[in-house]
Amino acid sequence: ATTFGIHDALKQLGIQDINPGTSTGSNNFSSGDILASHSPVDGALIAKVKTTSKEDYDKVMEAATSAFKTWKNKPAPLRGEIVRQFGDKLRELKEPLGKLVSYEMGKSYQEGLGEVQEMIDICDFAVGLSRQLHGLTMHSERPGHRMYEQYHPLGVVGIISAFNFPVAVWAWNTALAWVCGDVCVWKPSEKTPLCGIACQNIAAAVLKENNLPEGISCLINGDYKVGEYMTQDARIPLVSATGSIRMGKIVAQAVAARLGKSLLELGGNNAIIVTPDADLKMTVIGAVFGAVGTAGQRCTSTRRLIVHESMYDKVKEAVVAAYNQLRIGNPLDENNHVGPVIDKDAVKMYQNALKKVVEEGGKIIVEGGVLEGEGYESGCYVKPAIAEAENSFEIVQHETFAPILYLLKYSGDVENALAIQNGVVQGLSSAIMTNNLREAERFLSVNGSDCGIANVNIGTSGAEIGGAFGGEKETGGGRESGSDAWKIYMRRQTNTINYTTELPLAQGIKFDL
Ligand code: NAD
Image (tube, rainbow, N blue to C red; front, side, top):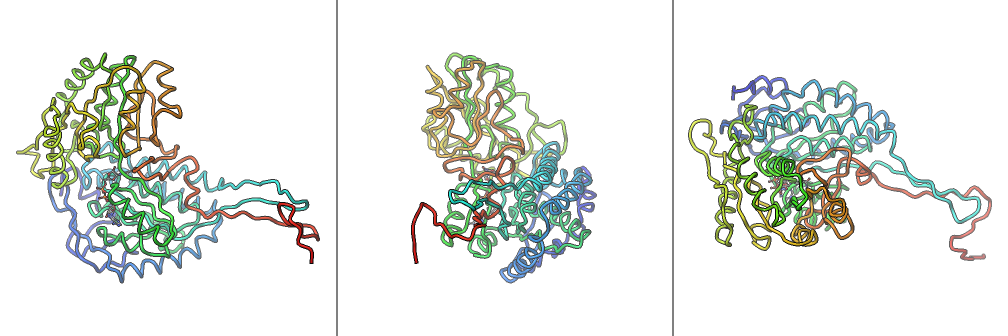
C-alpha cells in the first residue's frame, strides 16, 4: 500500500502498525475478532483491526456515560469551542484523511477531500449553533405565569454509518450532538474501519489537549452484531443509523421495542425528470455525474432518468456519448472519472441487476461489465451501464448500489413524470430539469415530488450541509445536518413558572379545598 502516498497518510493519521492487533485508538478497548480492511483500489490489505467484543462494549459505554456527566455541564458555547478546534485539526489533516477515504472506500481523491470539507463545514455550522440552541417563550393563559421551553442534552448518541460516506456522516451527527451536550458512540461500516480509527484519533487528540474525557467520542468496530449492542441498549436514547432500508427496518424495530428514538437515513431511488424545456447540456452533466460519480454509490446517486418523449432521443444520444468518454480506473489518479465499487459482493449485485433488467424486458444501451487486467486487479472496477426500462420492473423499484442508470420515457404532462418519480418506495432525492416556471412550481408543490430533497435545475446527487438532509417513505424520515436537525439530539422541556401567591389551574378548572 505505497501508491499515492497512502503509507504517509496512514502515519499522519496515527495508524502506523499495520500488523494484526494494530492499536485501534486509545478509547477503543478492542479484544474481539480481527477485521481486515482491503482497498477496492488495488485489492491490497491496508490493515487489520480488532473488533469490539461485548465486554469491550460495556467498557466503552461506561466511559461514555461517565463522560456525559462532565460534558453536559459544560456551557454550550464552550462545547462549540471544542468543535471549532476539531474542525481546525481536520483542516490540518484534510489531505491524509481525504486520501484514506479514497483508498479505503474507493471514491475519487477529489471526493475524499470533499468529504473532509463537509466535516469541516458541519463543524463551522455547529460552532455557530452552539450559541443558538434556542427554545421559544410562550404566553401563559394564567395570570402571573411564565411559560417557555428549553433543550437539554439527551445522553449517549449511537451512530451507525454506511461505507459510502465513511467519515462525513459521522461528523454530521457528532458535531451537532457534541454542541448539544451529548456524547457519541460510533460504529463505522465494517468495510471502512480505518476511516473510523483515523477520525477517533483526531477527536481524541483534541479532547486530550483540552483535558476532557475521551469518552465524549467513542469508537466501536465490527459488523452488524456490534451495531446490535447499541440498538438494544436502553442507555442509548437515540440511535442514528445510515445504511440500507433492510438494515433500517431491523434497527428501527429494535430501538422502538425499548421506546428509544431512531434517526434513519436509508436508501434512495432518485430520479431526474427531464421536461421538454430542459437545458440539454445541464441535463447531461447532472445525470452523468449523478449516475456514475462515486461509482453510483451515493444514497443520492441518480438511478432513474425520466425523459419526456419529445426529448428522449436527444437525451439518450447525448448521455450515451458522454458515457463513451468516461475513464475508469484508480480513483487516486485525478484523470479518472469512475473508481471501483466497494467489494466483490457489490460487483455481484451490479451483475445481477443488469441480468435482471434484461430478463424483465429492458434493453441495455450502454453495456456493462467487469474490467480485468492491469490496474483492475482488485476485481472491483465495473463499467457504468444504461438500460431502457419501465418503472414497474422489480429491479427498477430496487436500489442497486452501483453505476446503473435506467432510462424511462413519459408523455404528456409533468404530472405523468411525477407519478413515475413518486412511484417507488424510497423518497430521498429528486430533481427536475426545466426552464418552465409552471412545471418547476408543480414539481415543488404539495402534489409534486414526495422526496426529502427536491431540486430544480440541479441533479439529485450531493447536498449542502446547511439544509436538513434526509428522505421520506422507506428512506426512513430522519433529518441530519443543517436547519433545525439538531433538535433530535436534545430533550425538550416545557417549563411553567408561577410567580403569584395563587394556584390557578389551566383551562379555568376549579378545585376548591
Ligand atoms: P448497510 O445497511 O449494509 O450497513 C450500514 C451500517 O449498518 C453498517 O455499519 C452495518 O454494520 C450496520 N448494520 C447492518 N445491519 C445492522 C443491524 N441489524 N443492527 C445494527 N447495525 C447494523 O449499508 P451499506 O452497504 O454500508 O451502505 C449503503 C446503503 O446506505 C445504501 O442503501 C445507501 O443508500 C444508504 N445510505 C443512505 C444515506 C442517507 O443519508 N440516506 C447515506 C449514505 C448511505
